[in-house]
Image 1 (cartoon, rainbow, N blue to C red):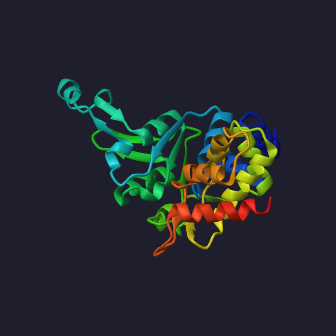
Image 2 (image 1 turned 60 degrees about the vertical axis):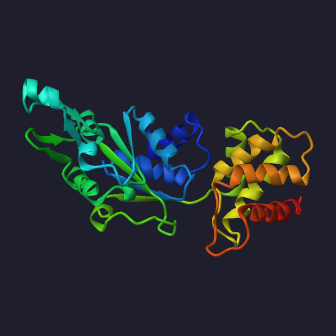
Length: 282
């Protein structure tokens, strides 16, 4: 089976809409034994792609969420004090962390927002990426078994509070970028993942959400998750009025968008404007 056939099979089996090009890249990275960095905005499907590829290849999938409190030992593992007293510094007294566990099992370690990990924790990844080895003090070397792979994600640098991975780490990944999908694909996603079946409603929902992404008053627009939430809410109105749309859009989108700095309008004001602008075209 070639890469195109693998990508098509994954799309079919895991309900992935579009993403042929990006999916092939993730598949190729896995087959080539390369660690992959997937970069894209919130809600574009980074985790979905990684999990689908792992499932297709029957790989265990261990997830770590980037957090400034995630220490080196949380990543590699710790010794259990009572067991150390009983058995000494042995493998039996060691509780492996997700990196060690993934290496020993030949699994995929998925690090969500890896750039949010502390610098010291990021540095632990370097020998695993380079040589597929790490050293556990008092125990020795752990070597990554066949199939071990790290797939990391990060949001674009223009996101507030987002910093890039250190150069040394970036140099050891291959890069896959995920942009927002086109309008037709987003409609298909909403129809697939929401409980709304009305095509006209879905068109309006997707149009509202896509408008948030280029709206002058917004630093960050909504992902397709906002469209899915809005579709699930608005479907409870038999014949929704403009105010029903505004109320539903505020519920669905207020937590998924960011206003520009210094803007005097409220998030409710901006959403009301967007809904009015979009519905005026229907």
